[in-house]
Image (tube, rainbow, N blue to C red):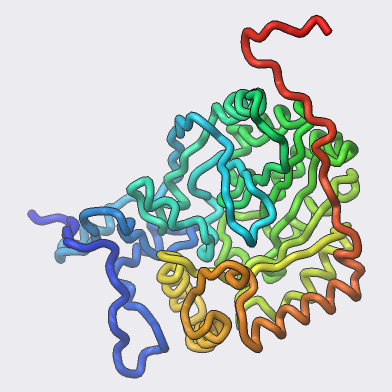
Length: 387
């Protein structure tokens, strides 16, 4: 008896096929789509092989309906035995030069996540693997303390959550992020956190103490206030009301908070910019920012699949506007414009954002963190000074 198997192709990943006559502009054939029951509660529709793999494997049914026996995708967590935990960058349009990622992959499953392509470096798919096969760094607090203790370390703000979310569901049990904050608090080291999880309110005690010394600030990403769109686009992230509630708890505790309208997707959530800013301002946010949708590498095809599966009537319009803001392309990685886009549509969104912020009193004063409290941790076995 035959069974469901995989075809080994010579060139991964599967290229976007040509469009059939009459199909929406740029609509891909979902040849690698995974059955809905197997990916329930996930964001991506497919699990195509990473671009560095020698083979691309696509499940197919040979007529015996044995695909029905395949198990659903379950979250697994492996250990990442990194030697260092602080990652450096030299990007000219990013306001930090160092960051920490306690986890690789993210269970939130946001279909638009620009970090998805990083899973290809691990030999995994940026699709469903990215949100179900996670890697945790349990030694991150100890590694961080060791790096801060080196004689040549110069303190500057560490950004956390700029790649994958440090407060994704697995953090509830692992508590790696809380351990990192405890190290930073003891060392008097500044930190800026980006998340879309209400779980951050768990650590309000540490963050409030650090904020009193100008050592911490938090940015919460609110993509939409529409619960249906949020659940479809960010299936395992906190609901919009929960994020606003966390924003209020942090603000009430004295933690400087920022709302991020990110990403702004034309013809999908751009109409909500003013409403999101208004709700966040009433929750206590004092600053705001936005980022235009970015579709690098595999993210483009994953977003196209998701859009066709959930909002096929908007597919043509959404991608027309995206290309208008990216010089006729699906994505332009040029520094200085990749976050905001170019053209009339991008200009209009930027002006709407600025006007709304001005009316709500947002961004009138920028919170600044300090390195004045930094105390280098004592290295293991190091003798204390007599003076």
